[in-house]
Length: 553
Image 1 (cartoon, rainbow, N blue to C red):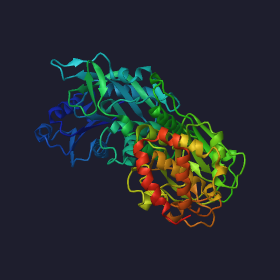
Image 2: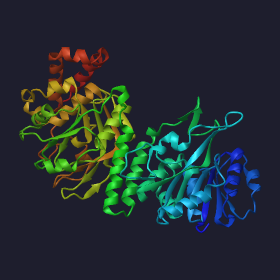
Image 3: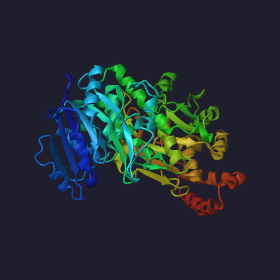
Image 4: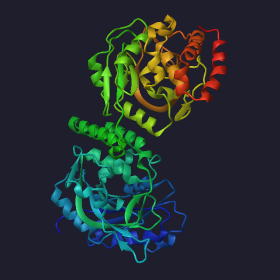
C-alpha cells in the first residue's frame, strides 16, 4: 500500500464501561500498520468505574486516555482532537465499532479522490446491529439506506437538493485533522453537549462545500436499548429526539460560522443559499396533511423621516419563506392609520408586517415568526428583537431588547387585557407580525371615521386592538434592523414608545381611545360576541372602566 496516511481515532466515552473496551479493541484491530494509528480515548467524567477497562490498555503505545469533567459529547470530541497527531481523524462513539478493513479502505478511497489534505470530509456506510435481541441481529438496512444517502451522488455538494441529515453518525465520519479542529474550535460546546455529529457535519460541509461517500459498511452502529438518540421498533429505525427543538440555535451557529470563514464570494453565496434552503426544508409543512404555507404581506411605509419606500429596498429584503409579497401604499396619507389601512386593504396575505423605509427584515424574519406562531402560543401579533442602525447604515446596537433587560424571558406571552392602554409592550413596527382578524378588518375598513388623534396614533391603535383581542408574544431573537432617524437619541425610551412618521414620539390618546373602544365594541356587539368568549366580555367591563379614568388624551 503506497498511500498510508496517519489516522487518529477519537473515542468519546460517558458511562459506557460495558462497551468502551470493545470500541478501543476494534480501533486497534485494523488491517493497517499499527504505527500509523493513534487511539485517543476521552472519558467525559464517567461514573460507572471505567478505570478497569482503561487499565487493560495502560502503556499501550497507540492508546492515549484523556480524562475531563463531564462536559458533553462535543466537548469530549474537541478535547480528543486537540490530542491528535494524525493526518486524518476518525470519530467513534464508545458503544459502536470499527470493522477491521476500515482504515485500509478509507485510505484507498482518499487516494482516489485527489482532495486537498486539509479539506477532506468523508462518510462511509455502516452495518446496523441490534444487540437488544438475543442473539444480536444485523439489520437488513444499512445506515445509508435508512437516511437516504443511497440516493445521493458519490460527492454531495451545496448545490444539490436538501436532505435532512445526509451524513453518517460518528463511527462513519472521517475528517482532515485541520478541518475537524477548525469546526470544533468555533463550536460553543456548552450549547451542543449531545449529538455532536448533528452540528459538526453541517459545519464541515459548509466549509468544504462537499462531502464524499464511501459506499462500504466499515463500521457497526449498535442499537442496544440504551442509545440516547435512536432505537429499533418492529425492525424500523426510530429517532428518540426531536431535531426541530435544536434547529434554531444550530442554524444560528451555522450562519455565524459562514460569516467567520474566509470563503471566496461564490462559495459564500452557495453556503448561505444552502442554509436558507435547509431552514425552509426543516419548517416545510407536510403535504400529506393537506397543509400549505400561509402567505405573508410586507407593507412598505414612508420612513420616520419621510423617506419614501422604494421597490429597490423591497427587493433587498426578500425572504426565505415561500409566499411573501411586498406592497407600497399608493398614496402617502396624512394620518398613519389611513396609511396602514390602504396597505392592509391591498394586501393578500394572512399575516402582515408594516415595514418603514430604512428598516430591514432579516432573511429569516417571516419563517422564524411563522414557525413560532405554528409551534407556540396562539396570539394575534408576534414581536421579535431588533438591532438599531444609523441613517447611514452603521450599527448602533445589536439585540436591543435583550440588552435592555426590559424583555426578561426568551419568550413571553402577553394575554388580552393583561396590560393597560398606557402600557406600551411592543417594539417598533417592523418587528411585529400580525395575523388578520375580523377586528382589524373592521377597524381598517373606514379609518377616516375615527377622531384625527386616533388616526394619527395609527400603529399604536392597531397593536392595542390586536393585543387586547388576541394577545401577543415577544421573543428574544433579533430578526431585523430599525433605522434611527437623524437627530433622534439612541435610547430605550425612544424605541419603547410609540413613534409616528414625523420622527417624533406619538401622542398616546389613552382616554379618547378608551372611550372610542367602549363605544365601538357596543356598536359592533355582534362581531365581538361572535369571536370573543363570555369570559373576555366579563373582564372587559372593569378593564375599560379603569382606562377611561386615566386623564390622558
